[in-house]
Length: 209
Image (tube, rainbow, N blue to C red; front, side, top):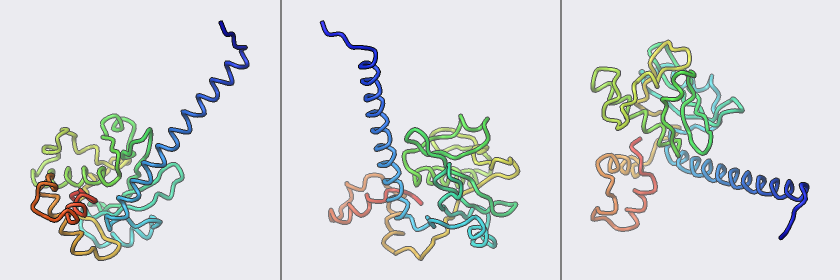
């Protein structure tokens, strides 16, 4: 039988805790790095844009126009700047326990969906907004989760936030726009009668926005 002193047991516990924390940090870094790779392919990620600069870009845009930028607040990684019926507004994206979700009022937070990818998050709310507009109501039909549109209400609760049309930082390539269109009509890219190289390009950005 082997006995450990309390000091030895505490040392082992600390080492295990340190290993667990290290794995969590590595996992977070990998997820954030993957999110950044996807974002840089979108064309509507503007990087270190300030809130005032985003406001100027969106000032004369129609409601639903949006862009994504780095958050100016240290506790958040990204911010969605969007045009609403009351003017430009900002909605932060928080990262916690390996997931991205919108930051909103406390009562709404439990209802907000979580995503592995920032682009997936934005895509979800774009589809939600477009469905809401087509349906002429605030319902979230067609999103699969039945999430109500109040999830797209900014923290002040003043106006509904729609995300429909991204603002590109630079003119996107025709190839990129084509793969978005193709991915909108099929999720079975590998079954298409196309060269493997082209299939890889389509799969490299399998989003609708």
